[in-house]
Length: 256
Image (cartoon, rainbow, N blue to C red):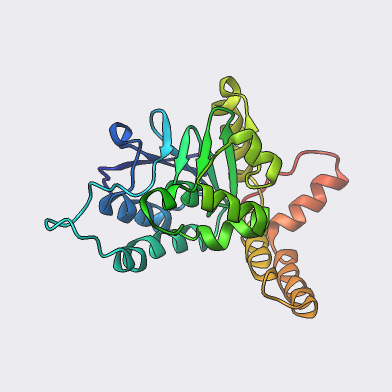
């Protein structure tokens, strides 16, 4: 499949989605949303990374991407374009890393936060910019952010639309880690490659369990853990992991 607003490359089990509209700080237009969704749904990789080209990760909705009459149907755009993209990230059966190389604003911030892991360069930043143009946060932000940082911090970040540095985001538990700029590329690549060579079925079922935990009772979650662990325990990767442990060597997982 050919893309115009992103690039997709796959090697050694790792898929890389790069947002490639640097002239507009990788702002999301209709075509980019469709292409991100397609890349996520069609991947055969064992781990995925989403990052941006140039000085920004993603500046959010492209406000120039409007109908001829200039009137946005925001509800329809969210329902028909954003929701499929976000579900493709959340429902992706393999780990998805957001490698945030620069500013992540508005829907761009929430695109990153929808991923399983966020690794940011220390010069990167996050901003819930919606109230600056008279909107509420969307793209899943009102669901994701309070679960990551609590209601007090989520409310403040969204009301004031303050810029949150990568270091602050890491301290808050909003992202996994902030990395010095000169180490950023090598670091996220190593992190991503470790997932791409890991036990894919275990990662898939881990994601299922963790996503379910917010709504489950303890008993329901214990039952789900037992069921999913039974599935993992029947995989070749489990037997390889045990063998490697007993033989004091590095496991060679195949993803099955």
